[in-house]
Length: 306
Image (cartoon, rainbow, N blue to C red; front, top):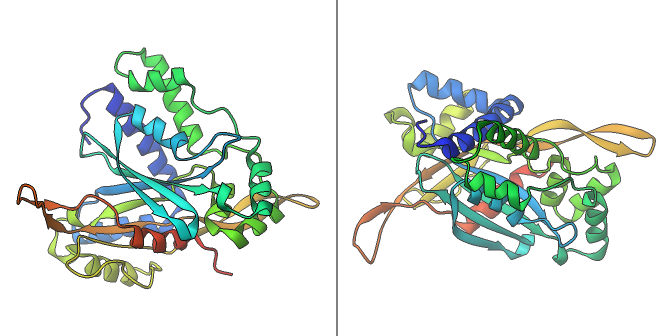
């Protein structure tokens, strides 16, 4: 992907590193790559999703992640509310449209029962250092800072989005939070890891994969377990689906010491964007936003099947 300056290069290097880790963990992605290779198609990432927990102490939430992305050139484009799930999301876009959209979601912990709030506070009170004002300023001014400082920031960014930011949770904490919110249990175990990358059907560029139905059929034929339904009707402005989540062993603290707990880590999403007519200009435009009703169903793809 061509970049225009050092700041965009820093962002690209971050997402390349996150993609390499995600691809290694999510076998469904490698199966998708084989599918598009066989069809001679092109993979373009539509959007990347992240999750977080919103608390006052430590101060965490959407802003914990969005301020990093805004410093790197993304801007808020829309907000979404999911009251039944106690969650809020923000969708960000970059001025360079070759960069993916970002979708960041927080769990509003103050809406949970007292017992769940107490567990979450206990679990993440050991949250490590966040990016400082000076760090955000240097990210914003990445074109002017020294190369060594850019390398150090990249290293810190990768660590922030791949290492668990708090101590390994207790097994019973994860189970208790999962009973209230599978989203919260997922974050306790995964931290700020990428929740999913997303293939853009619009960018496949071949007739054999030029809609989401054909793409899903090809994925199933390749043996990839897929979500049962496609969100969005044919011809609508947005249609989305995903693979099932990959389950990996996570470290937890048991009653007698360290243990392993199998849990969901990530899934791979597929999106097909339709068009709408701008009532002000009369121009036909591709829909670049998100639909809350679809997102609320896709959140559940990380629910552990027991």
